[in-house]
Image 1: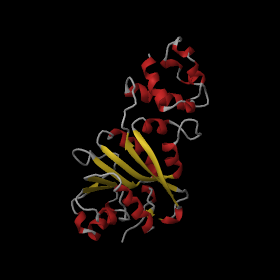
Image 2: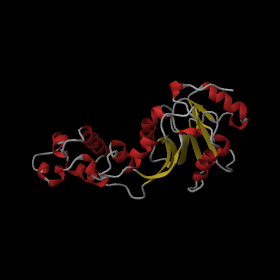
Image 3: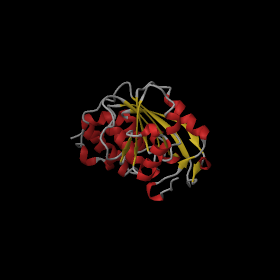
Image 4: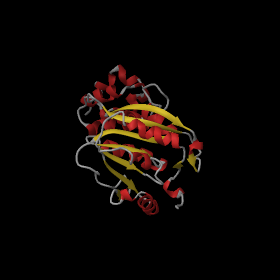
Length: 250
């Protein structure tokens, strides 16, 4: 069979109903190319293989799991990319969809990878630690609204789909899980430069208890800093507010 590796954050999904439910959500948005991240023992993969007429690949860091998958489902021969989602090149030419029960120890990094690939991604449906899923979906004013919320929502619409009990996994993680979906925004948020936007958001939330004026003072001139908007804290600004401020940065 196979062994679980804690070092890779492996918690395998054993609930067949949840597996089917995740794969079923993929059909809500048409796609022709699909990448599964971290297939592990194939909880999602076996149902994905039932989808007809698509080009499928999976990326798996664990060699033992890759060999297990290829032995169990010979059709996967040549379709498993051995490596990390954080290191591989884009798996397809053109647009593709992403799905996965993501390793929780690199979940934030995976989200930033989705930002790197955003021009090619049609949708991303993924299982995350509930706390991470809530942060990604949070709106301004929420106590968990932060850097990842703003950066992801600047480029994607976030849908919080459903929660998953820890008892649905082997071994059960110490946290609850949730499935979210990212869809590219139909209208881009207008900003001067992405580099300025990323810098502003990260600096603002780095000192989130301070007013915006004190947190991002080096980025603006004194006249601009007199705007009442700078009396607010980072968590009180919308994605659009941050984007609009990029036009006033030094």
